[in-house]
Amino acid sequence: MDATIVMSISVSSLVVLIASLVAATTDIWRFKVYNLLTFPLLLSGIAYRGFTGGSEGLKDSLAGMSLGFVLFLLPYLWGAFGAGDVKFVSAVGAWLGFEPMVPIVLIGCLATGCYAATLVVLHGGYREAWANLQVAFYRLMILGRRLRADDNLERVQTVAQEKERRKRLIPFSAMITVGIVFTIVWNIFFKNS
Image 1 (cartoon, rainbow, N blue to C red):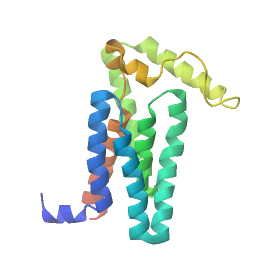
Image 2: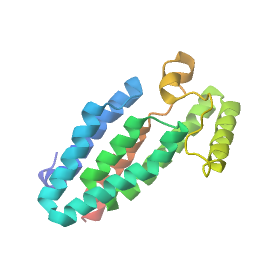
Image 3: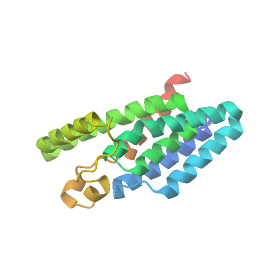
């Protein structure tokens, strides 16, 4: 690797890149992002940004963490993905701050949509996809009354254990990793040019 490229990767970006590759691996393999990764990543991100950036760094870290948490809490409550994904995205925000989280989330969500569309085409789950969209819409409509529906819809963890349905799940942390890698590469090669 070229020395100038290595020098342009910040400590925060390097830590997040390594952690995201670990999260993506466990998410693809087990559909789980472990607390052993997320909690230390979250706490160390807040501490590092506070130590190196003072109060402004701490504020930016907390803002990035909050953005990740707030954006993905509701989909978690709907059962769209697991708590590990929410904690992982929040930890990434703690390390990188608010501004980089916007393209990471947008690209990660775009990757998720592309992946989902590919799964629907490959596995012919058009009816199931339509039913899931309808459920999401109805849950959004009842949001004013309660945040978590008490129906018998399957949670991600239950679905992940079924062989046939498992191949139709989306490893969301892996999709966020796509956003992280893209954003880091963009910043190295294009933003600093």
